[in-house]
Image 1: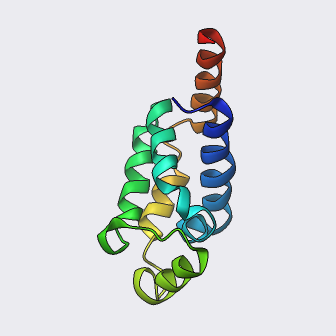
Image 2: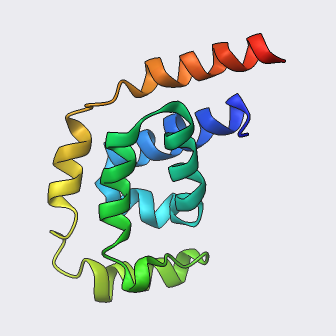
Length: 117
């Protein structure tokens, strides 16, 4: 089970911070090495709609695999995944709708964690 601190870091700081700043391009460049963990955190809090958006965005990478190395991710993003800068437009727009109340869900997860420990 992910700790509340880890969930908050993955969702609030990385996913929301990066996507709200620079779209999924920014997320994958800066935090893409944590994509699997971010998906696990989204599922842990019940943010299934947001997890589906992230899965769709990740699927644009060859074999849905995102390199751990930032320079390798940058090269792949620029050359293969998103060379014209439009690959994530739909996912960005869907994310910005905030169909999952991420802050509320993270807070609820933190409360449940506190009650069980």
